[in-house]
Picture (cartoon, rainbow, N blue to C red):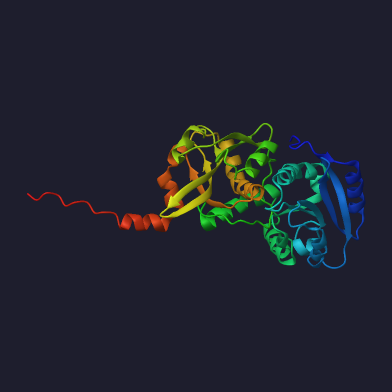
Length: 336
């Protein structure tokens, strides 16, 4: 996999990481991006249990500044092999450039430090997520996930979400556990998502580059109507599309971020499997980078199925039912 942001671990970080891994009394190593380089922060000594020591992080976590945290795991707490939990903290309110840098660099950090040493990942977008309660939820999920492999856990998570709420259902904003996204996202993808609120474009189309093993930006554009999505979305390959749908219901204006997963029937089996296994993860990733909630997730064969009426029905089902209920009845036919 290629280095997505060009930022690499400094010699100082590699030295600090080696020291951290052999120091049994060390609980946490902080890592930050400074001057286009991954640099070491504090090494925090363990004082109590896995869960209680989360409180030691509080002084180092800012409301607006992203941070990577390597947190020593014990198998009693998580049910996993003892190792390191990788915490990626990227606040919703962080500056756009910082969010983009951290989102596109975290796979590089894991790879350069050695992915075999990291047994779990924990993503947070708000300071109050990194708490004892948040870690307990995370640990419970990890215990339930054993002894499956990382890829199997990701696939099972997708199936659990789909079975519980249906893929077209509303997604939640936060995720305490690894998103399951095994492919890195390109820097241009992170930049496009981070700028989703701008007026220059309201559609982003993403594709999986199977050869590079990465998620890339296929297109971005400003469209007037949902029916224009048809011309932007591939009709023979799966795609992920994020559409910022601005519309009015009565006197109220709405702005809804819609995630559209399209999978044409003629798509290759391998592509179907890859896109299906990553779709829940890409939603979580995009929400973290864009700082926006996905209001609706929609599945379709291709873009031609997406219309204004279909989106309004998905986003505002009660209003649409009311509208149909009070529609003017047809005039009675002429009697013979």
